[in-house]
Amino acid sequence: MDTYVTERTFQKVNYQNAPLPKGEYENCVFDQCDFTSFDLSEIRFIECRFNECNLSLAKLIRTAFRDIRFKGCKMLGLHFEDCNEFGLSFSFDNCQLNHSSFYKTKLNKTVFRNSHLHEVDFSECDLKSVLFDGCDLTGAAFENTNLEKADLSTSFNYTIDPEINRIKKARFSLAGLPGLLNKYDIEIL
Image (cartoon, rainbow, N blue to C red; front, side, top):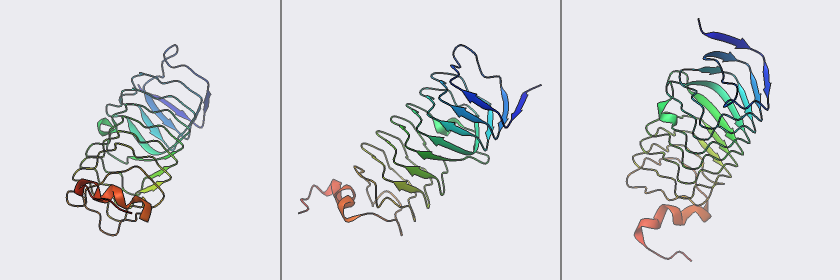
């Protein structure tokens, strides 16, 4: 039988030394825990918070993230497209998600705040009404992506081709205009 844990706080645990049992974790807090390269496959997290954790290169095959808040986390090279799609919802505040992938993932209304999203793959994602607030999107891939009503007005370093992405009613700043016109090799003064 799977483990069921509720309303527990885990602090400074290195999960390479003490593996997290498979099961369901509800209303739990993970503070400064190290999940680097750990296999989180088929574990269910519901209404949990991850504060200043390192989840880089963790395996996420059928991992359930339902109403999860990541704050100040290092999350390099994660494949969110492998997660359990049912109820998938999370927010990211001041996180490093460089080289991660959300390929074909439905992320409606997700909040990315003050996060580094270098080389992140958003190809074929549904990012309708997503908020990218103060995010660095250097090298992020947007291809056949639905960005309708998304807000990128405070984000920077993105390149989005309006001809191969849906951007109706999306919000961009004037400073972000070069990222929308990049493929035309024109100078904007």
